Image (cartoon, rainbow, N blue to C red; front, side, top):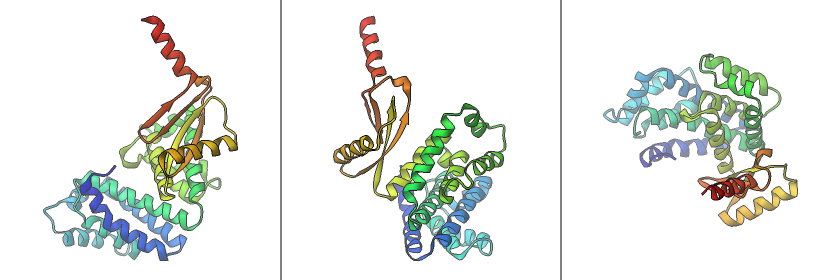
Length: 273
């Protein structure tokens, strides 16, 4: 969650992005997304620039003029305008501005997927990719190896997903490996999946079961959760035989644990007293 100050700073750029996305074609939106994420990379590499652009002592016009002078001719006019609007806001610090720039790039990627009618697919592909990584210790180790250059790890993601996933999925997966908002890979993926679901006005339910659910069972569970939360719920199922039976469901900060493994653990604790 953004602090109130940062949320207000982000609002003007988000509104400008929504206006742009409503009229632009998919390719223009996707190009803007890539360019904004490239600006985020620039800010990550250049702490002095990041501090200058987030300095509340500098007038908004001076900050937006500075970033515009740097970007003009290097990225499209739409991207210049979007980043300038972002920089014009009052941020709580340089790190918050960097997070906001990444978030704007993500929102642009999701807008492109939405215009292409691929948003639900992107959400599912990103979650499935995270399951593949978590199920392969060697791959998980390679993607989290801090001794390996980030460019190599991002390139590995491209090799794994190229031709197998939507362009927006590839972009989001690369960002997850780089650490969206300073998070680790798993937290980054979860947050990106949740942002994709929110774009569709849905919450995400992470469901752990001992055996796969049938389509009908998933639909019934989604309907029950939607009734409970008063909005659509996107169910993401992870199969883990170690829970033995039952189900664990996590929606936001809410956790419902009805697994057999939990009951056995509670019984063991009770017997030990």
